[in-house]
Amino acid sequence: MKVAVAIDHRSEISAHFGRSPAFLVCTVRDGRIEQREVRANDQAPPEGAPTHQDGHPHAHAHDHSRFVRLLGDCRAVIGLGMGSGARIALESAGITVRILSAPCAPEEAVLQFESGLLDPDPGRSCGCRGHAQPTPQ
Image (tube, rainbow, N blue to C red; front, side):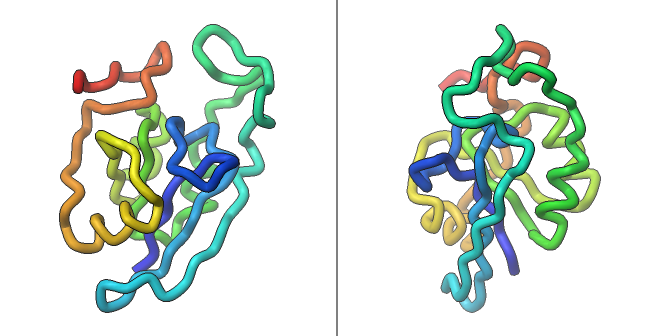
């Protein structure tokens, strides 16, 4: 099974799925990570790029199907925040979405998912204007 985790420039779990510069795709078998692959998010803005008030970069296009094309072979995706458009696109393609309530190592999140320890929380999001509001912690 393949599980993708949105990662930032420091290889930590990204706070915003769509603006993640890359995704760590782990292949899990028998409770162990056997392979790791980093897939670039070519649509992510460069680190420190100017954004609008809603946090999206200038000329941002809401083409969430690109995530399905990039991660379509994954059973699940994990992040710290995700807008509703990306979530709907992924779930419509049969990809499970899990949003963490607290940061952890990407590989730890993958193994927690594989073990059934990551519960769904459909109300949690990136908090961008126009998306669902984050779940209070």
